[in-house]
Image (cartoon, rainbow, N blue to C red; front, top):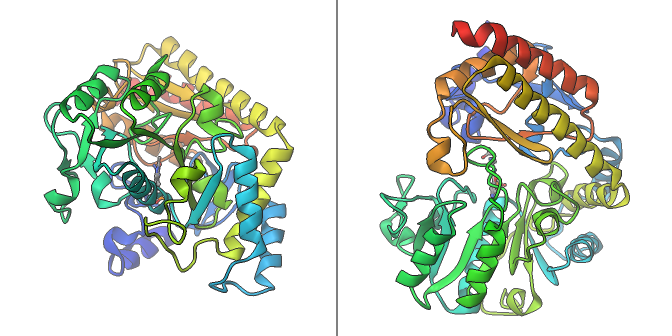
Length: 430
Ligand code: KE4
């Protein structure tokens, strides 16, 4: 029995599913999760001493690679002054100044402790600002686990939304409407059916929680127009894309301005940080300056701020990092496209910049229904093959691969060789 297996057995008696976040349990890939002892650069090392080339990057935060020396030093330095005061600190001012200085649409920001908290609070601010209750989200998009957003479109996009999780009363989701990603008509229909009632549309500007699904040409611009026409707010959930697609995230990458934007992951540098931000007239609605209440004991925690400030400062001062991770993305995902074409296997490779997903389906994947045609059993076998050969992918067909600045061409070539071998020799025999 490996140490991971021992720990997992023990963990399953102590934590639901043995983990503190469901996807980590490897439930859909039929393997024992690897318990990680340490990580460095592009690698993770598990408790049995096995090294893996890592494409999870902690689900996005580790854009500079694991255990970056500058971030580590800044965190240790901050710890020397104490961990938390429950009082304002200069670090929070610096962090707010950084974000407001980098993101043109952002005039004011509130720090919280997770992406879930950021989205939940942004929705409340949008409802408070517009005086409206309804929210449009897209099936297949994930915005954290707050009640109102745990909604999967019922039959058809016109349904008001049904809870995706037990324990969520229908009352919490009655104002959540689901549209189809990349289908502007499905959004227009909801606005026609709910005139003057929709506070906001929330969207992952690049969907990455049904696997990676890029926005179709004109989709984001179309959402901007529809929101303007209906005096609703457009919320970009940039918990994944923020500070990844470009320094100014999807707003800069696609040239579409959101009214509110949510962040997480990268802005924490590996520490628990989220944020919601936008125009002053909206953000000033938030307590204590306004009537929209939101609070948090550890929001803006000085140690977490130290990590986030260090990471954002490095990204701001080194634009070449974006050139590198996007180049590695082109090489890796473009290389996989060639491999699946050569092997003639029914797979799709969707990617934007350093984000990508290999779908095991013969059809194009442009929305959740397409993504759901994927053969998750085939994905699981591919995942296990890569893990056995020292490459740790995200343990789900419906998650993204993440690249970091620590990934080099050699890492990409090694990965492509393994995938080529799998598709040529293993796929046929599965
Ligand atoms: P957190 O509460 O997990 O910090 O953020 C929620 C969230 C919000 N919005 C988007 C677009 C997100 O992708 C997420 C969280 N992403 C998942 C990975 N797909 C986190 C991994 C996990 O759930 O363990």
